[in-house]
Length: 99
Image (spheres, rainbow, N blue to C red):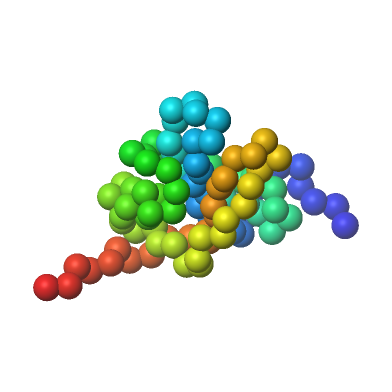
C-alpha cells in the first residue's frame, strides 16, 4: 500500500500534558492531530500554571472551551523519565454552566 508522503487526513485528536521532571520551568499542554497511519498532521501547545491532568483540564476549559476530553488521562513515563499523560479529545459544543 502506498500512502501520501505528507499526512493530510485528520483522524485522531489528543491532548498531552507533562510533569516538569527535568526542572525546565515550562509547564505546558500539547494538542496533537494524527492521521490514520499515526503520523502527526499538526500540533499546538500552550503554557499552564501547573503540571498534570488537573491543570491541563482547567486550561482547556479556559483557553479552548469547544475542546472536550473524551477519554481518561493515561499516565506514561518517557525514556528520559518524564511523567506525562495523554487523553483523546474532540471539538464540540462548549459545556453549559449549571445554574
